[in-house]
Length: 211
Image 1 (cartoon, one colour):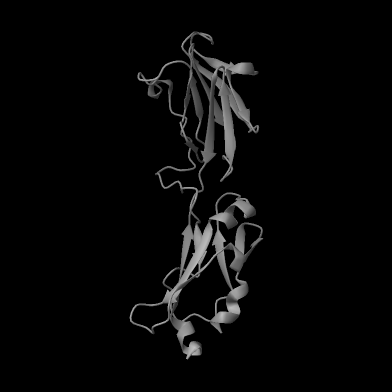
Image 2 (image 1 turned 135 degrees about the vertical axis):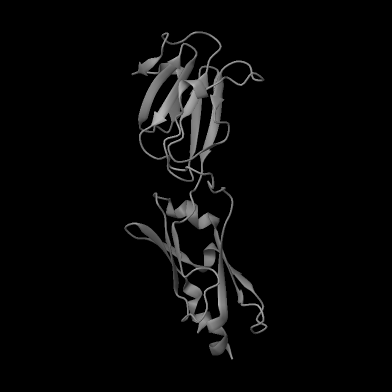
């Protein structure tokens, strides 16, 4: 009976805890021009933008109340206490105008990390978003499968194995109208993650249950 049901299994990949970055243009240069940057009028003091999340090549912009840079803007070799990023990330510091400083990353922000941003008296913790996998195999809803022992996921950027394990869970159930098997969930204790060159491979130790 179980042997027959295995061909009608559906596996749903669920990623939780940290949101995905589903916005258009992700991973592109989103620095914008100086004309696009405007200090939020409802906030006082030193302002750090964005407020919560980073993804791709998002810049970090700081608005100061007083003049801190040259007119017309320009590069800044040593930002000092004007802008500190912890942990360090490669990029360029540049004044947009006398009161606006911007950090432009030269590499993608790593997924599922926290960065502490300090600009004079202002401090903010920004979390980096995870961009969805570019490929999942087998796909959710696949039919007539052999017993599933692993699931391959390919990501455009590197992702920490430990962090990703905390986010993953799988729901296994019969396809609609096929059998009456009760659905169940696989969590991090039910599978291991193995990193390959350009993708992560999920090996499911519970595969014997699909036989």
